[in-house]
Amino acid sequence: MKDNPDIKKVISQHSEIEQFFSGGFAVKGKTPISEPLEQEDNTSAAEKAAELEKIAEEVCACRKCPLGSLRTNAVPGEGNPNARIMFVGEAPGADEDAQGQPFVGRAGQLLDKVIAACGLKRSNVFIGNILKCRPPENRDPAAEEIISCLPYLQRQIEIINPEIIVALGAHAARTLLNTNKSIGQLRGQFHEYYSGLGRPPIKLMATYHTAYLLRNYSQENRQKVWEDMKKVLAELGLPIPEHGKK
Ligand code: SF4
Picture 1: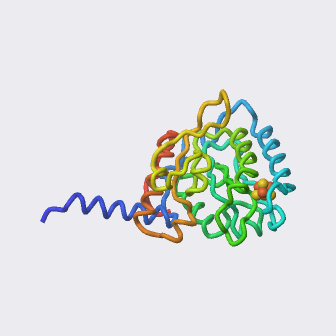
Picture 2 (picture 1 turned 60 degrees about the horizontal axis):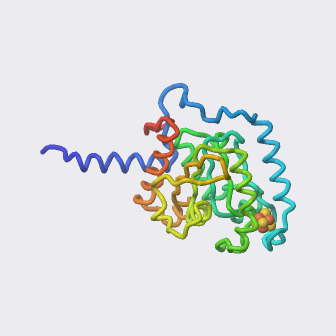
Picture 3 (picture 1 turned 120 degrees about the vertical axis):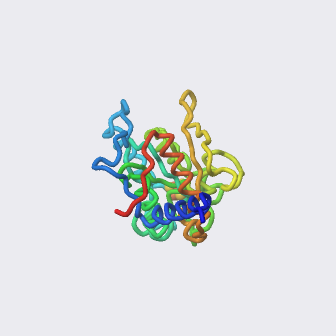
């Protein structure tokens, strides 16, 4: 009996996704990626880092909304000032609040796997959130909180000026795109984020938040995130890693 090409394709795709989310991907060759992982920007990384540090200090002293008095630590965001990709989530959770760093809990560990599967390191990208302080019980951000906090993220985006923003989840995507559409409608295609008058739009890819993926860990959802990230890599001219055990 002849092999059914559709079945072979499904099996191959399944294997690819399993390895993607288990961190089993590897880029073949000694130098994983020859394309620049960071921008070659006129503004030096040191200047950008200093501006980002100033924002971080403001965030850590901020009491513009009630979350400021409820937090253990503010979570300004962190990463490469010359990142070509900026990941934006919703708000810190318990682990992030305890450590003052973004995406360090289970959802953060899954994001690390996604980043590694793309042939990148966490130090290549910048990771931030719409809100810089944890909402109690991880409830959804309130509109007033977003209005108070969003200027910090907008300034971070303006300084870093990434080529692509990956919005993780509905709250990040809706806020940055100023829309009420669902994440299902928004994900999988590039949108445009406008960082200011006279500045060219930044491409934005919306995809599922890794916390959502953990709650809904289906083959279908994982495949969707992998497809979204492959589009991001292709848009940046970065190689799409071949799957193989490390
Ligand atoms: S959530 Fe944002 S606006 Fe509210 S206190 Fe924290 S840093 Fe300030």
